[in-house]
Amino acid sequence: MASDAYLNRVATALPPHDVHRFFLDFAASLLMNDPRRRSIFSRMADKAGIEHRYSCFEPAGDPEGATLDADGVFRRGAFPGTGKRMEMFEGAAPRLAQHAVDRLLQGEDRSRVTHLIVTTCTGFSAPGIDLELVAQCGLATSVERTIIGFMGCYAAINALKLARHIVRSDPEARVLVVNVEICTLHLKETDNLEKLLSFCLWGDGCAASLVTAEPHGLLLDGFHAVVAPEGRQLMTWSIHDDGFDMVLSGQVPAAIQEALTTEIAGILKGVPVRDVDLWAVHPGGRSVLDAVERALHLDAQALQASRDVLRDYGNMSSATVMFVLEKMLKSSRPGLLGCAMAFGPGLTAETMMFRTAG
Image (cartoon, rainbow, N blue to C red; front, top):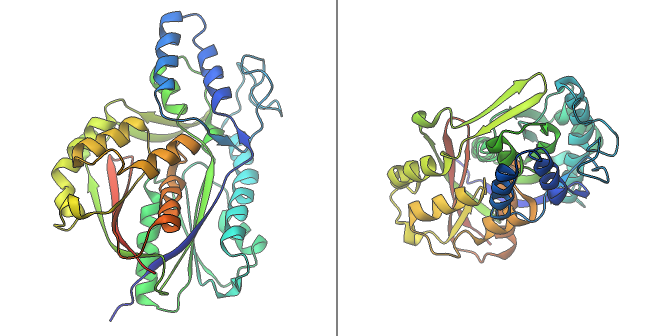
């Protein structure tokens, strides 16, 4: 008989630089010659429900100045190419990930970790984050390593799904899951209003979590994927010469609402929405959370944990839903039924049912 798998705990880490207001002012400066569109941008950005976002890269003093970062890499009219950005990722991502892992495994025998799963969609390098963590965090060199790359915001749910499979097949397994994203690395110079609004969602962050057969934390109770092929081009993530390019259409919330309305019975395995106590929804943006709330007819407080994470950190891609689950681990009593979901390119929703344990 297969063992149950539990998300025992989550630790999160943020870089030191709060850049939200700086990036808003920079984006507004790109619309300096179009007061009408600048006004639209400012009005919509103010409604985004975000107050803070963090970056691994220190901003310069003046968002309207010649350079955007303190190191002078992002110069107006000469932003770095993909190669330079990947060099920056190779330095920043392992440091942030190590911070989260050290918090998670403080005081624990790290040689007991049997598996390492890393998710990221904001950079590539080899040897990569997995081997850096093995070296810097005292993991066994024999640890089984898996990279889940370039899946976008829903990758954390897939990582938990894989961790559950591992633990159910090997009850002695101790699976370390790391979700690390350096989203602000892909800052662009553009006067495209939709792209500017999209970029003003993103922040950097990392979550590290431990999945084992030990019965405490959150019981991982099953997974379900929903793909809405008609929304395939509404959310894309492509590699260009000037970094990675995110397309996040304004039609995404409506597409998510429609998909959830038709698929919620399969997601919840027939459980009525009213019987779900906890909703850990990836805060892809205020309008995305509003769409989920409308689709499922949730009360105003149901998504408060997600709204709090969005307000305090923005959208950190795959790490974000883990920040929400961290809140629930800290504040929820045992015996509650929960549903987690995250959205990404495809248009895809990856979902997970869970129960709070002791």
